Image 1 (tube, each protein chain N blue to C red):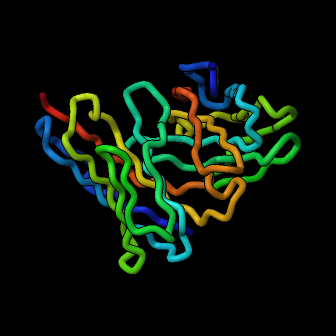
Image 2: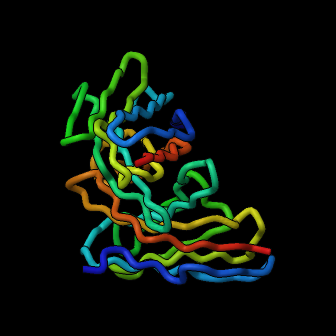
Length: 116
Length: 112
């Protein structure tokens, strides 16, 4: 089955700095890679996703890059703010429609702390 | 707009007891999922459902059962609680159109 490794496990930055979280996956057939943000006491919430036919996707201060050859993908947050402090999870799956997009293999999570 | 609602939020069980975690969604989503989250381990899929009457196993189904009698409800049952089932449980739902999972706020279960 799929295995997703996520690094670092904790990341501390100053407000305004950039933050980068990296994930590697093992199944070359995986084609859907979402990122979820989990605030304290809440369920995870999708912040951005990328499919394997795209190398990069951006949404305001958040971007995700995908390298299919190396089987890794990364989350980039620019101009970090204290409200970006949360746990971030990467995930991967062989998405082919239907429930396959929800049958995710998650990374271990990164605790991001943004200091004012 | 409630989204995905889970009850209870917290529960302590003794070894060997049984209980049901409730999950309901009001978004008319066909697909529903149960994940468990252990510290430092990410989330792991327990069971999922593609619609009323249809369920299937995920990565870690042992010790759990599910049913899906309606589109809205997807309860998770623990028959003989074991300490290894101490975890935070998340229910989620999605549609066929996008990959986005909508999660509930979680149910923290401790088995002593």
